[in-house]
Amino acid sequence: MSDQTAPAAEAPAQARTLAPGRGEELLVKLREWGQAAGFSQIAVADVNLASAEPGLLAWLEAGFHGQMGYMAAHGLKRARPAELLPGTLRVITARMDYLPRDTPADWREREAQRLQQPGEAVVSIYARGRDYHKVMRQRLQGLAERLAAEVGPLGYRVFCDSAPVLEVELAARSGLGWRGKHTLLLEREGGSMAFLGEIFVDLPLPLTPEVPDHCGRCNACLDACPTAAIVAPYRLDARRCISYLTIEHDGPIPLELRTALGNRIYGCDDCQRVCPWNKFARRSPLPDFDVREPLGSATLLQLWRWEEAEFLRRTEGSPIRRIGHRRWLRNLAVALGNAWRDSGAPEFAQVLQQRRATADDLLAEHIDWALAQRGPALSATQQTG
Image 1 (cartoon, rainbow, N blue to C red):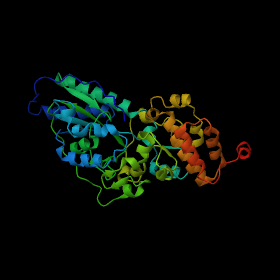
Image 2 (image 1 turned 90 degrees about the vertical axis):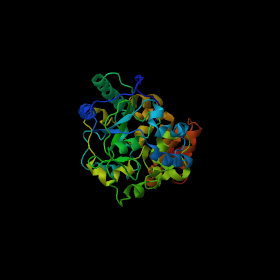
Image 3 (image 1 turned 45 degrees about the vertical axis):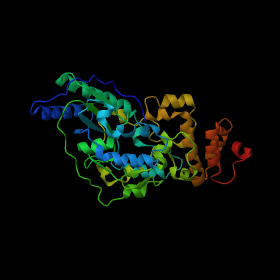
Image 4 (image 1 turned 45 degrees about the horizontal axis):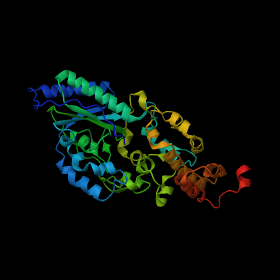
């Protein structure tokens, strides 16, 4: 995750107050400004998240955060906004839909079909366009500046997946939706295909009400997870999650989980794809999230050929760039091994062997695993024949 944040404004020395009715008036304006900026929802949460602290501690103590040490390093600051930014009285929460503008009505079926095509390279939908950190942060900053222009000196700070913030908890507390069993935020009219962001402010804006949980008895997300990373409703073991393994994890992908990755090379949408509420997922009005070719239709062989310079050029302004060419090839090697096993097409083994001689230790180990997925490696004659 990014560790950058938008600049924080100086907090006034004295606590702020609002005249009767002024808070409601500001909330209406915030929602109007937010909609104009491409946000689908704006709400307001309190800073008291004490009831979330036991669950956070239990999750960390179980080691479910994996290599994401920053989550443990900040401790309970994640659940204490006023400690993270002294003077904070409220958190403005924002939701931004990210399905590309031209997403077809049957997108969930199409995504499922691509997972059944071994040679296809599947990138999570959110990562096929511009880096959401850049889009959200810029627009949240603009929203905060409009609020400051309206009320005068304002203590604030903008966050978008950029600091120890309990984003889903704050979003749920403010009524943007409820926490689904896959741990992501769900909303009845928009599902979960959306980004979240926050603005910590020292302004006592009126709180917006929570909404009830509507998951009911449905366990579709738990049943669909390829690696059983959702160990219980509302509880995710990141160490088994394909999104974590292909993005956050920088070492070898655990042997027992490689087959389950299939042809997913960056992230995983399975728990969201099967969620019934995502039949209501909305398209983004912003061109930022339009698919950058070839990320929506690329093959494994096509992406495997990218040398580092091409990888950097193709992923400029994309969230994919931050994993680097090394992890990119690691992920592709696993997917190629799965394709070699499932299809038997010799070209998968051929391209793996061609890169083996120049691979570093991490990539070489994944290439060797991939080649072992379908009998003995090809001979030199087969490679050139």
